Length: 350
Image (cartoon, rainbow, N blue to C red):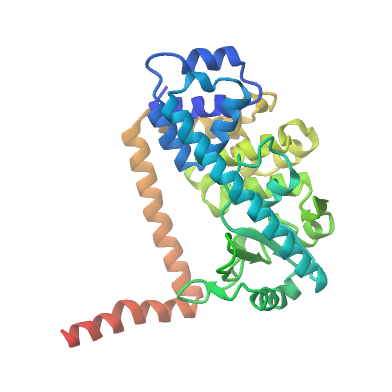
């Protein structure tokens, strides 16, 4: 197995609730076990607190170098304090929106924290506070929050046509920025998520509205597969797979069966199955077997992996920029201004 695949498997074994402790203990206690690469990849995947919490729960922290244990403990403690502050922030935001009769539901990281699905609130690292808002009231919600202290905005240098969320809202007094969503995916994939249904079927967890398990699971998968291009690159997100395990999606056969009706769900769950025993009962069809075969080939040969990813990145960049030039007048004007007029102005002033 390639070193990257081995590292991913070791991380998955630490995170998994079904990998036998005896197997994991034997692996990580071996003198050649490389904790440095675990930390590097765990950091890239924003998983260091989760790795610490799972090793602690498995009573295996004594096998780590003392310096590493202290480092992970400190990071988790900082993240726990941050998450508790964010949860208070989320409750305040929800109260403001509810007072103004704005239907809303919190998404992804904040929804997971509010659901109380982690044994330790320090496990999950959270960035922005993503909120799905009824489309007809999103600008009203934006103004209300702006007048409630979130008076700094951050967006693109050009108008994002039909984008899934408005500009980020930030407050000097709060930790996390807010992104108000009217859609959850990029435009071509809007039909895959039924926004009115998500709002209508939401659940209240600790006074915070969150999607039901199926909608939350589907969004976690499609966000990685489509927004983050996981399907395009045939790559796995250990973080989102652990999220699914934490809300026990793997134990919900009805939910899994529905997700397997989507090719994006099939390719995602096949890679999850490759690393995590929680998904071992999923039956793979020929398409899923093909996807994991390509994944294994790519991971087995580092030069091939680098070449494929480089070519795909180049193609994706060209296609996305060409599409913007053809469909977004604001972007075209921005490019002309930045690349030509400003360049000429600097040349004339030199």
